[in-house]
Image 1 (cartoon, rainbow, N blue to C red):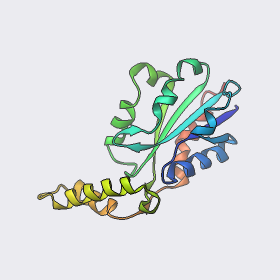
Image 2: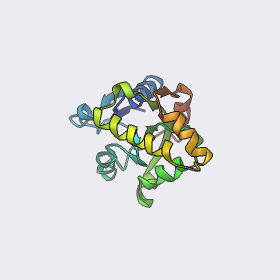
Image 3: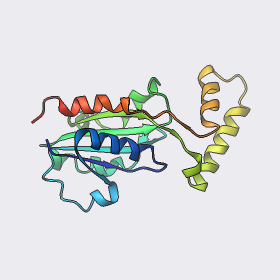
Image 4: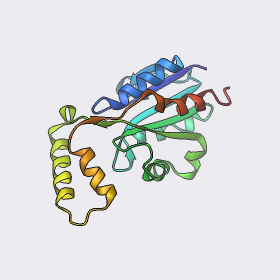
Length: 176
């Protein structure tokens, strides 16, 4: 099955996952700006990866805008975020990115990445600093909020190749 992995990455976590998936699936791999210039008709499977931001997948509108014309292809979307994989809000957020009709054609996955403050834009760093400060100042924090404060106070990396396995299994499932 001829496969392409297309990604958009801000601090490198999504790019890393895209490269891992492409390597394991023997797929072509392109950053979104380069992929937009390509003819994708020869591909049997199109995998799109973006980073998670407030429950949305970055640049997902481009991918969703092409779903109808890719009806004959296996479509996979993945997002990479800062939450651990067992966060119950992940499934809810993934489903919110696709309407009922789109969910029939696209299988969505989540891969935990992390935070890399060194690679964030100044604006993103400021927003995160304000968020962390507000969260720290909050009285009677829940256990989840206390864990979040610890996690997002500094850079960390929880990415792991094992998280691409469900994507690879789905890619092989019911191959054309």
